[in-house]
Length: 497
Image (cartoon, rainbow, N blue to C red):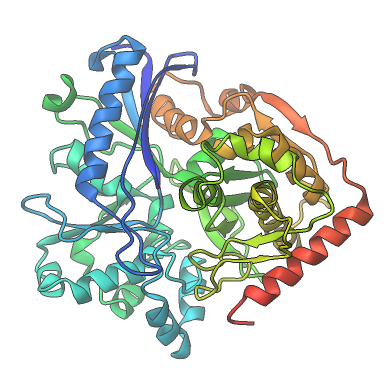
């Protein structure tokens, strides 16, 4: 068996499989997009079978491009879009409905009912989360309530619930392993993050039979062995983490006070708070960063629903760009005298506002506003939202009064223009690593270290390397004007205001 590690990165719009060699370098990649389903306004679904097929396709492609065989792979790590819900039959493995995606807002009214009953404090105390359609629990409740016979079948133990990682583990092991990790469990509204256990009170409130819940393990653990008929060899699955926690690990943010922000479909910033479970007073989330050797490390998290998705909107909706990389060049050519603000609340606003009913809006348009101004507004919206998150984090937690350098990753960070504007609007340094595939790298390290073929935590942290640091250049007066305009735009967008 070789020292290769296979990372499955199952995202919101595409699936990737990456083979890393023993020196933690990328040896092969496979990637495939899949269809987004929008049955109603604010509803977002995926076909679990299509996701499964993209996983098989990309693994085979990654192994082929690496020029190795499955028997050369020491272990598999899985990272996944979090909060997306799948329910399937225990006997057949067949999903009973499309997956309901984390972006989906169909349970907004149900969340409101729970809030009116005074239950948000109960959920927040036990899970660190807010009552928002974003999280898995209310989506699962909807499936059990709206798919014929599902509630009764779940009570009989005939149905399985899982986030995408659990569904893939089940399929990869031929139904022999039904498990998740602590990071994915912590995003369900069903898991007590202080006690590290499924919570009876919360499962009762959401009418979720515990018989359908998977076993919760450490992020680096034995999650089962793949069916040898799939790839020609049995491969152990030894690492699992939700995508944002995986990126935190891949960025080697192992010390309290270290922070990363990932710019994919959405944007997610995590601040490592160590063993301290910091309770946010600014509507951030308290979550599990990772659990290793039975010890839990916590984080404060801010979630932005739309980041790269705004660029996709420019490309696929407005058709003002042909490819995502065009956005930075176009933004650079925008008229500096026009202050155009895009509030990308296409599926509501996340932290620190948490308004599921807000919808996207554009402010400041003139007759001269065109594609360049739209592009700049879309990219700046990501930067402004990150600023909102960091301000909330600094109010909740500070480490010795030191400002935190932000480590960034995800598809959008390849744009120098966007990263410079991010540093300008944050008024803080932004570090872009040499390896941008930090999400896949994080679970590869979990699996590789567990398999004994990759270095320990300390040595892995030493290997992190910075590609470029972006220092703020914008003058304070300009920054203040731009931030004032952004806050005004957000205020006019919020329904809950």
